[in-house]
Length: 632
Image (cartoon, rainbow, N blue to C red; front, side, top):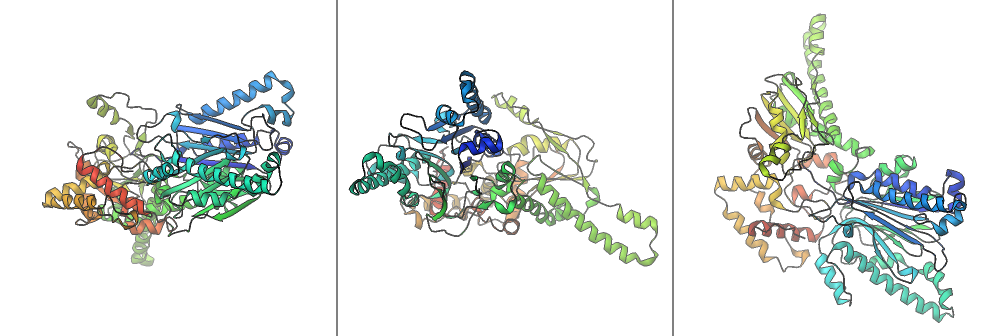
């Protein structure tokens, strides 16, 4: 993607179902779980490179023995940093105590991070918040083993203020107005309540305090705690949690906005944000990795039993399509095919833009995530040419000469790697004029890949702000002297903010919004902007379920084609010689390519939760009032 858009998080969870001695005997190390967690986190580093965290729980430890460990990092390479810390602790413990090396019982008793229940998290910092305090997992500690709670998630809640106030009404004093803290304290409140009630009940049955502890672990109803905790959550979430005594859970939002996959056999239960991570790390086939159903939780009890519970009633599935277009790893079997399909389905618009002149057109892509959609686009170009060749050969009939046949068959799409990203270049100078010059060199070109007068088609997975296109890519592509540059987005126009975990919060950042605003000015319809603002203001106190997305009216007067044309004008550098055309995927083709992931609110404004409409209206109010702040 040429525009730097960040996704919030990726999670990993491992529950070892056998004693640690089993893994030592079979795999040569009792640190099997730690090693696998490192791989799972590294395989999900695409989901977060600003912070990483790891937590583990040891089962059946004696009082006074440490049973929980956590390490977090916000360093430049956070995954490597936390596992360097883990390895240093492990190696120094074994070096100082050689008797630990082949004794799993001593390792478990004395060495941190080893354990049967492990959780990992990677994140991107948003809105400048990238301190260690913002890095998951979060920990809520208590002297009662059952009341210790570790939480990490891939989520964003739209109604954190409401949830915060609910906690205050319960008598709590949350330390921070943040959705992670609020969620943890909400779960923690109902966890405390459940443990207290169970203890009271078990005591009545004649058990003493020490005897009560294992019975509480056995009887604790995690699903009931999650139902009470999540009752008022509005947003997209995949939330993972560990309880101090050894229960674990992962819960997913009712619309399936954020992803979660799991695998289970007689040795392990594994959960991750991405399917191919589990496939690769544990060498299991696609068919054995399953998606956690929306609105459900996977619950692993201390005894290793695993079951699924419905936590919230599932609603219409609106799994995030941006996961498929950009954020998720393209090695997933379904995602790979979907991205190819996105390239295929946008080809008819390309053909129209080049007037069918494939002979004088070069096809390329913006590295690196657009490469798969590029394959789909080129394959469709080949299919189109094959049909033309067939028609030409049939028209010439049996008397076709060898020379004519070769002339027809030699026509094929011209494919080049035109743009090259310089991954090591950093725009470290803050002075605007100097920085712009550096930005212009983030990409380089393959000289000689395009002939003067060619059309150049270059596909990107999405065009959000278009800043890099204007300041860098279009300028360097123009050096190749093409007649026309057609920039293709495999995603539709991004018109609305996301509020479920992708860092796209402000309307005025979107080039589609800027284009519509410019069209209003040209058409003399700027009064509509004020009308929308006033309508949005009338809903600030309205209950979320009744809020209407009035920002749709901002785009309504214009066709997608008109907005695309204006975007091309906005993004064309002043001194560019080539004609610039910008093509976006249609909503209909997006749905055809990603039929199971129909969450398209950033393109259509059709938010899957009531809080989304409130957020988009607040974003418009902020835009109109000139407030540079997030809307949730």
